[in-house]
Image (cartoon, rainbow, N blue to C red; front, side, top):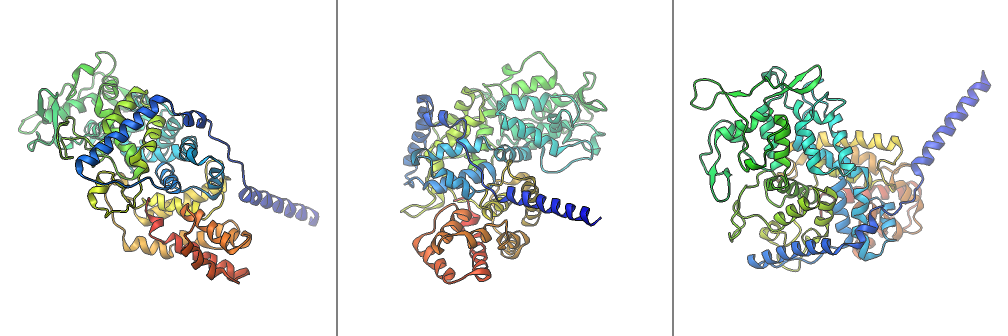
Length: 558
């Protein structure tokens, strides 16, 4: 018996040693597969980036605004990581980036992020909030997690965005085996007798896919001239019928044991304002009816019309949203309220003038097959994206509003959590990490976001910090656990492994803030570490991490 116990104990120790070795070991970071193509930068790619830069330059001159120079590479790298993965670069990633020629580092980093599963997962959650909301919905009828995984798979494979949206609008099947149909089942409620809600779907379709808020037309005609349909030559105000004729495309969607199917015998009916009874509503689109096909189911016809390459609102909507994902602010706010028409001769930036970059990015997106990778690469290459948030002139609100300086934004809850978790680890925490690291991150991030406060679908709204959030950063569980000088945390590894005090402070700054310390910062913390050893040194290292995690710089995107 004792022999078996000893063998069992040895096996357990070997298992723990293997796990520890996996968690503590480093791995080689290879060049991204797409980097050679990115680095070459075709003449056509260079042309469109220059066109965008010229548009912003002309706009700044027209507004009489000075503009800042380019931010340093470490700031741009951090901003890209926060925008595309919801976290910051790891120390091992920064070390690998140092091996790349300076002029290629940003392109290399974009290529790496686009091949990182964290990018697909993060963007899927951001887009998923617009597509199906943040609620779990009715039990068995909405598989939100399964939908987000499917969406992430599509993004990871760089499926053309128009194809992705067509699938969501027109797909049939069961929520688990055909996850795209969760776009429809997300609207099922008790008031519709367990069926998809055409009204909710019409509102969701226009906001998420066309960047247009027409929800008020559900109840009445537009009385304030805020919604225009028709054509540029013959614009007209939005009518209540416009909304419900759009909703009628979803009128045949039916949920049964076979999942989502189309029942051609089922028609959409609605009682209009000032009407005495319900009437059958025929499906019609509110603008560019010539783009609607005549064949296919109603949902298939709608899917083709929404995603048609000549339907400019479709491209504008995703361009504006991707810009917001990458920078925390849309080009045109609110992110889902872009006018159908604009006056190109308008002097002031308002509802009748698109901001610089929007139309050119939309046209390039369509011309290149609705390629999200291409869109992100182009945005990341522009002067507007790479502009510094600091300048040698007084920065006013109009500078930020017009991208003459990079607009500062507070990190969203999931970004704060992601930055703390990654900032307390020397190794990259990604899809290739040990399963324990991934599960720990998932649990810690979820708990932190719940306590920090999640804006849900309104995540692009302006927000200010709260006392609760400040207290959570000062003495919350995540900060407490992640700054401890324990074996898997960066604080312990740096305290015991750094060759000098100067190297220790430099490593902490790179790990937590993605930059090296200034001479003043270096002197300050080297003095605190001087002569400290053992547990006393570890406690000082914990304090330094705590200070940096609670700094203003840590909680903002620039």
